[in-house]
Length: 186
Image (cartoon, rainbow, N blue to C red; front, side, top):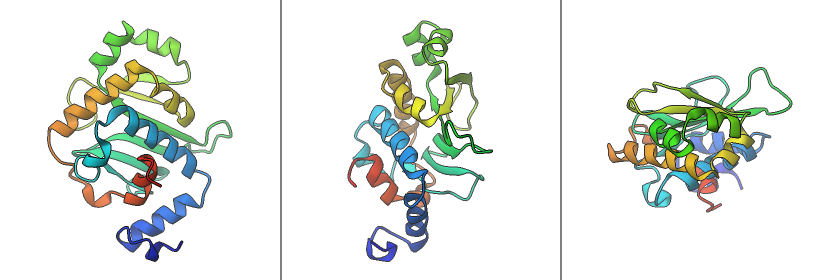
């Protein structure tokens, strides 16, 4: 269906969605975004576009495919690996609550041993506070780790804290067509 006939917003957002949907990165983006939304955001459909926004092919950073933003912070970023690597052409990073993750695993090293293809590193993303940690790696590993109750709990704790601070500031970048997939509405 052509972008203009879908009735989901401005033409630029529709064109970006169409470009992503027509390419090989669409499935990885949807899988990571859907896993994150399911694991971390309570009542995601009711808070969509108001407390969190999901961008589609934002022009902010080369290689960025999508970002899920809360307040002014990119909590989840999905991007092409540059240069392209055959094993995983798409990676992702997410910010989680460090204390919840370390308490759940006992220590960070346990998480690293359980998920050796992922990195668990301290982070200082603007707006996410002092109690944060970045988890990053290949998209399929990120989808899998979001199924872990400890990691999901750490993602949910940070998401609740961020959304509790107020509405997303970059709501204009929200792409409802991509969010429809992340929310299982498409």
